[in-house]
Image (cartoon, rainbow, N blue to C red; front, top):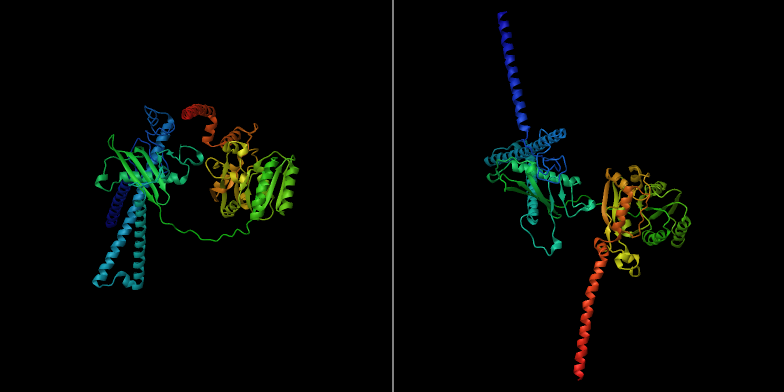
Length: 591
């Protein structure tokens, strides 16, 4: 009995000691985790995972972001407004995310290094065993499998070495540290500059903004990755020259420049504040492009792919006659795989439209057309939607067109090749013609339409803000929901449809088309349009008239004419003096 009591007391004492040790161990692990995952404290705004907020020296930030304004304290002070605490919490959260991401990357690198070292050690051990004449581990399991493994391992290492050599050669060919000779200023590839918040670019694209936040996810993520890698490199030096006592944060980033050589790769140069006032740290990264890789090799047969061209129309019968002239030549005589659907609004001039279609049918032996009439107010989206749903012949390829569009047979082939049901839709960028009267000086000097269709900066521009001309299969159009038929009048319906496709899983092919032209016509913006539609209409009207230089010549016409008159007067005086001199010389010779 006494022995059992002592045993029970000893067991209880041992359990209590073990419990205490476990509690102490848990507390130690928790403390170690908190110390490891806590990023270095900084009052400066941190880097977000994409393009983060800028620091106090970036004036491009709006109010409420970062710490700085023109002077004084920031909103993140303890005495600031309640909203500053939320900003401070967001900054701390972003610091945690950045540090955790950096730790994950270090762990991944350590795992890769450990795996590579273990493979090298295993290879050395196998070599020693073979040199000593003893059986290796693979030979014990089977000489054939060991030979195959070594062959695969050596092949993989050889491929990896070849790839690394290729990537190094790409960096050597690019303008990273040494320039190359260029023939002229037109061959220069400019850089884009960027801060934590903005990108400053010469190629302004659709937004027309010289500076903007990058809206494309690939560019945003690429710059974010470069910034994160730069901070990781600064805070984890590998050599004595790179060692520093400073902990770098996103607010130390000043600016960077980047450019892409399409056949070599992308260069990044980033500048950070150093430890002293006039010291900086500059990091250079190069993302080389790999060798070409074949993705697919397929044969595309378009011989049995008809196109249903849908044209909404209201009045404008003279333009429709010109359209049918081009249609007869391209679609009937050259292509021969086209159906035309005309959706006419109202009853006025309806007979002329019908007569034009019947004449084309009779003269060109063309029967593949449909004329639909809607007795309602004109709506482009409504007309195209009705025309698309009226087709009953299966899943046809649709081309939404306008009456002032000129296209070629090559464009019809592009329409077929760049669309695929359930996979791709085609949004070509057409070339919009300027006012021919301004281009050629007077109506008498305007050449025929076919001779006007030259893609030059003085004759027109790529209409990259227009999304009305599009090719897609009827099934994709129906599944996406069609047009917003509540939009009346001019503009807006095409943008809504375009955004629907962008929000879907379909691939949107957006590219300039050399065979699609918008013929100039005088544009009237109705007073009944809502303010946003009226503004879009007026902007389009201004851009359609002439180039920037041509509009400037019109604006400064009086000043230019005054200059020419001044130039003509001295020339006239010089001619008179010359004639007088010749006359005096002739009279002297006669004497």
